[in-house]
Amino acid sequence: MKSVLTLAIAVVAACILTLTPARAQPDSDGCKDRVLSRMPNFYINDCEDKDFDQFVFAEGNPKQASVEGRARNRRVELVRV
Image (tube, rainbow, N blue to C red; front, side):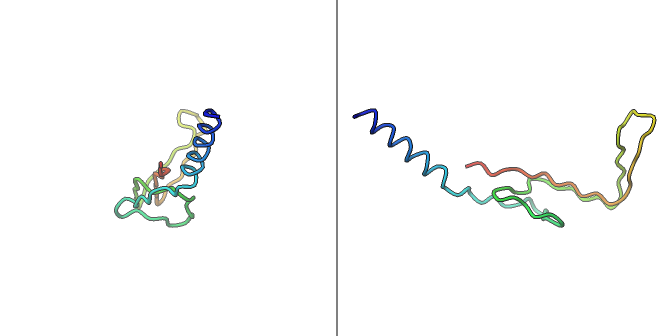
């Protein structure tokens, strides 16, 4: 009987922890979503915007391709309960 009660308490505690909403985490200053919507419980931890940058694909490959233009980098993290 004691083990059944312990199991029941563990199951109820697990359900409560699972259903508890994550604490709201504010985005870093000056960071916001521009194009894509964000998944629930994620926040922007860091961002960087550049008016001009270059990205090289397959660095070290003789047939390198690159793109140039405006760059927006977002570091998104999951809020942990």
